[in-house]
Amino acid sequence: MDPDGNDSENSEDDELDVGSPREKITCTPKTVPKSQLLKAAKNAVEINAFNQPEFGPLHLAAPGLEVTPLFIAVQTTKYWGSSPRTLSVSFMESTSTELRSRIVSHLNAWTRTGCIQFRETNGVGQVRISRGSGGYYSYLGTDVLLIPQGRQTMNLQGFTMSTPESEFKRVIRHEAGHTLGCPHEHMRRTLVARIDPEKAYEYFRRTQGWSRTQVDQQVLTPLDERSLMATPADQTSIMCYQLPGSITRDGRPITGGTDINQTDYAFIGRVYPRAGHADAGAAEDSVDDWESEEWSKDE
Image 1 (tube, rainbow, N blue to C red):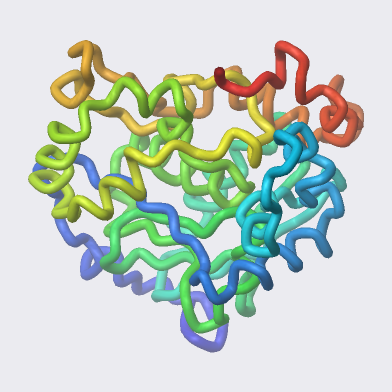
Image 2 (cartoon, rainbow, N blue to C red; image 1 turned 180 degrees about the vertical axis):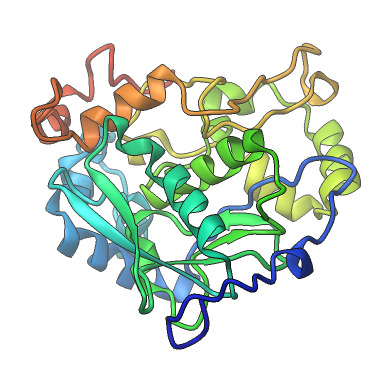
């Protein structure tokens, strides 16, 4: 597609094939700048009132907890809401019709149980995909609407029609999960506790070129469970990194997910229920279920 939205069958796929690193490229989810956190929180709440912390687990916090505007912003979720929604998709580079269709079809793998769809547009999409350098990433949930229109919200470095189908499942479905508002599962507290920090620093420096600060941010800092609407930690989720036993304390790998698993599908079906689906309406009901076994926090 050229800048005017016209199909271009003379794809630049081969030019964007940047080659394979020694290890699989790791997803690095993007967040809005700190200066935009309050705006992002306000935007999320305007889209869906249930993103407000008082509707989620924050109301269970200990009495006397200092609740500042910035704290509330960090605790605000990025959930699109349980009503069906279509997110428009466009591509930053010239991309063949066949490849565009293949990518969008994998974004829509979540619609097996969920009500959020992705649909290509001839204009500028809400979800804007680049296949240029920068690795794999996506902004989280409703934050994609705050990204300037000239910048991508998702990056799929080097993807072409020659990329194995297994990578379309592992990477594109994972990044779509971020766009739906799902954070990294390996950053759940029980999984982070299994990682040896020094071994992780060396591993990600060698395989990804990350600094210690980047490893702290992307791997070693557990998510605040008060900000999550979640199942118990699941190391086979598509949202979980595959981490080798060489960096864990017990020598056992964190297996990670290579495709959307049944727990992922069940969860998305609950928070983004399709019309007529067995879990329809359960998204808002789940606000009352934070202390139940199914929606329990990791202890």
